[in-house]
Image (tube, rainbow, N blue to C red; front, side):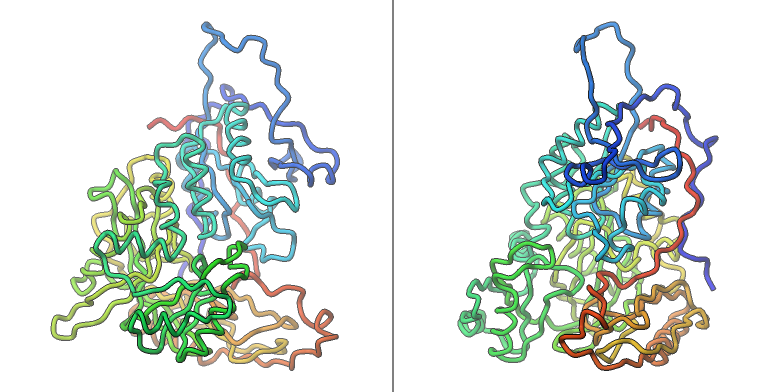
Length: 552
């Protein structure tokens, strides 16, 4: 078996510039009452006794001489801001920040109240344990205000003698927040706000990409909650069934439907319009799209003005899906060689999409459909499904680092967002096949037993995450978050495919029927897991990061 998914050891203090004695920080007072803390925005830091301390965002300060021409210059501590970080990716990001002597400040727009999965939505204490230096949270029960957060961060920057260099989105829902905070903090290395909508809204996304002369699916925006515009849309767009109906700002295949007739499409439109979308905002319209033929790919990129073309494809994944439960369901996703001429059109197309939606700093993740031309031996006619201005999920970057020599995606992400030069390896050709396997449930009920979950038995095993738990509800797997387990393999193509098929075939769940409606609260969990992972991996012991200046 390969080594477990752990970042390389953080630098020792001897590896870093120690300016602890020079850097001073003015911190807000500690809240003595948890009730008072809940009513206010807070910054949480690790206390002397190893527990998190809830502090006021702003410290009391008396400035008698605002202008002091003879005062010595203040030593500033460089810092990055992570928006809504998750496990395990935050470990690798913190390690990259430590190696650059960067302080890590996390912002959690919607704190976990205990009903969400602690890996996908870690609490303040978990993030501090992993090595985040301080965590900003809005008041409990209050909607996150990006303007107030910016004001607070600017005050923190002044009082703690910090210098924020970059704002990094850690999931799809934090992309627009990161763009706005980057601009409000006065950072030059942020993506263009004029195209922020094109990086989140799938309708505006298509407008921007089409205006750049790149192929996109035919589409319509439908606003009637009864789905009464479906027939007209199908006629006007000259579509043939199946067609796609989706929410405009979703992720992880949520609220995406493959419809085989108008009635089915109407029902799906009705589910979306005027309802709350995956991002918690009210959805004003549904997208009805042409069903693109061909195979689906994910193309991941790093963008930075310091790279030769400003944008660079780093890894490509081919999706293996089957039609099931009314949509296309993942079986596994396999990395392919981005330098293979067969994928040249995907590389050029993905780079064009990045430029079209204004991704200039950081990572990008683009999902594409393409057709294979057997005569040419190449994939042709690429068309975008969607684009995300953030690092890919599903541990794709972790796996890319494992099989591509010299490629360190988390370090590159930090460098790009901070405006540092990005280190690009001579080649992105993987030396092993990397595959992400989706382990499904074919039943719906209360889980009674599992067999085949000992994935370590597989010769190409790399790592896995198991979410299914005895006594909890499982559903027939459709969306990414509904799978019982996720498995990562590395090896030769033949060995990996053999183990992927074996893992899915030998994983068997037995369930009890769902309880009657009156008994549901007793027998079933209060809320379904928000993530395919339940267990929180133990962090490596965090090395104390000295307060130091990164010289660029």
